Image (cartoon, rainbow, N blue to C red; front, side, top):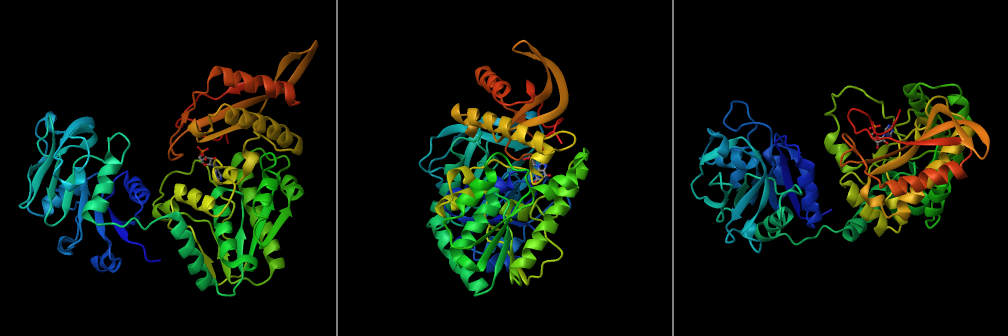
Length: 513
Ligand code: XMP
């Protein structure tokens, strides 16, 4: 695929993926690479521009990450952000020191004044809020650089060497708090790097289909379809590329939400490919009978899933390729996790041991989540599938607290469907990132009509989050909660009490198990 490419050189900052997403949003393809990547590799990518990210270090300390000095001789425009800006100043002969007095150390929203003659700020207001987060200060800027922005506390918020097309900003243009930040990135791309904006999903679809056809030839491809956004879009792309050479195995474990299995099946009926829906509800429920420990449930479901998938694969026969819906954030993040295991997060779609294949194909490997959704639309997948909220691999089994039975699952499915329906009806679904119902294993006394009830308590959970690592509970208006509550206790048998979960993550997690 021959798109113009920008390299985001990663110095360990927390917003690196965000920078990459912003560049892509501007219609320019980019990849995140660690700062240790050999210069020969970077050169081979023929970048039209390079962005140095922020990072937690101080450039003047020994062992702080540095760029290969030769990078400044490539004739490629460079934008340094925060640490990246200081690094450029430091390596090109300027001087960076720890800010001596508090006023030069800046954190948070800062009023900033821009020089509109600088390409980076061209066409933008001369004053705006920027998001700062730095304790170091550029005491002396390198030769050839001009100061192009300042704040009340700091004379050198941005620097530029227009001749070499090197730019540096102490603030973070990629975060929402910086006004016109994306415009600055766009200016860098289009004014300094002369980007043509050749990264569009329509174009990506075309080139990806052609590349898949070439790679797969007349081979057979097998894909485990979970009904989630990533595996669905991967399936649609492969179906578009190789049609009947593709077999999608959709393991229906009976732990899906209401009507979900049928919806997935319907969405794929538009392609001439092999869609294998395996009804394995009984098998999963038998294995789960009497099990109430969340981690054991996950393990059982993960293992059973692989077993069912392997059996189905055997029926399909020899395949050359196993397809996976890996997306770019998985690629960037893989291998960095040293965190304690809170939940094992067994993902349906892990690699089976007993399926013979020659190669793995991962057609979404270079896409961010919002790009995956866009591609799904481009391929003609329905909106409800493309915008589907994340759903855990173990499904409703970890939303029925305690042991799992078909009755409990059916009760939960009905209640969950009502909750989701009312959220959509109220137009709130874009304001929350995940919302669902949980069937607790607590029962309490109620009164209905003239009779006593002793039924389950249902919990509603809704969160807003950008990364699912931390999350806040959604402030759903009381009237909507009331409507949901009234409908559920009236329409769903076995539930007589509704509670709303008002804990953030941490200390709670998003799911209850
Ligand atoms: P927690 O509950 O850890 O969830 O705050 C964070 C995100 O991960 C999803 N989740 C899972 N996804 N297998 C998955 O594929 C799992 O076992 C699993 N457990 C939680 C959860 O829905 C949320 O989006």
